[in-house]
Image (tube, rainbow, N blue to C red; front, side, top):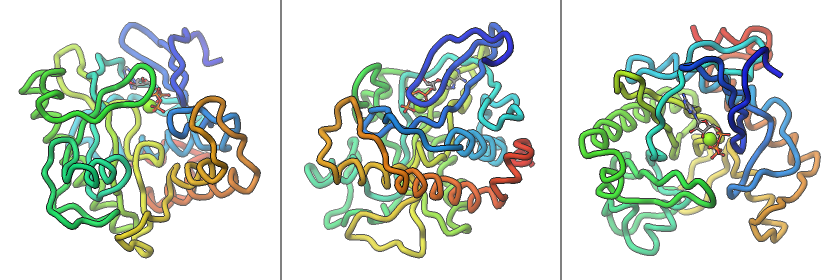
Length: 287
Ligand SMILES: Nc1ncnc2c1ncn2[C@@H]1O[C@H](COP(=O)(O)OP(=O)(O)OP(=O)(O)O)[C@@H](O)[C@H]1O
Ligand SMILES: [Mg+2]
């Protein structure tokens, strides 16, 4: 149990503690969820990969947008952060057509209100990255919404600011990742407001849980892509014919090891640091 912190909530992946009126401690567990169901098997060190990668990206993008990070603890999985008033939006940016974006496009020719060119294939790169927010469902699955619905939730001006900042964060990270052989197909952010009403990037950023990471050297549109993210586990679970309701299936040892290997490889490629160096000194990713 972390010092005198008071436990306030459990997310699917994180335990949330209060450190004071305006500070939280987010502890990333090794739990993994697919299709919004937490699986009974953990992936060793996954929480450390998510914490370290997020810290790396917070440091890398601090000129684009303020973020909630105050300190990463020596355990490598605990983040001290500013407590924010979270916006009721999942802020998704898509650079490529995959997942629910691809499903919506096949049905309607658009995704979240964005009209897209005809004839796009699965995994095709979009002409421009697009902002496709969704609601933060308290229970069940998030729902894609269009710009008007998102603006109704947070206000027109704030919506425009969030869209501009999310697209710029994506641009900066996608460029960095591409130089290291990883395509960021899409990614999700959560933003909050501080006491002054300033927009602050929170939660996790550009991790394999919040993003689709594709190896650039194997990229080939017209089919699903191999990936460094949860897709590997999703594919395994689907191969069992699981109905995607709780309880989820146990993962066999080789799927656990394969998932851990992919998470660690994404960390090492993106940060340019050995994961063992992070374990020895988590603050190394902040430089
Ligand atoms: N700076 C912050 N201030 C207040 N709340 C935050 C802050 N950063 C993150 N959060 C919230 O903390 C929680 C993080 O926990 P976790 O990611 O496990 O939850 P989850 O979103 O239910 O799971 P999943 O990511 O699988 O959807 C989220 O509800 C997120 O909105
Ligand atoms: Mg989350």
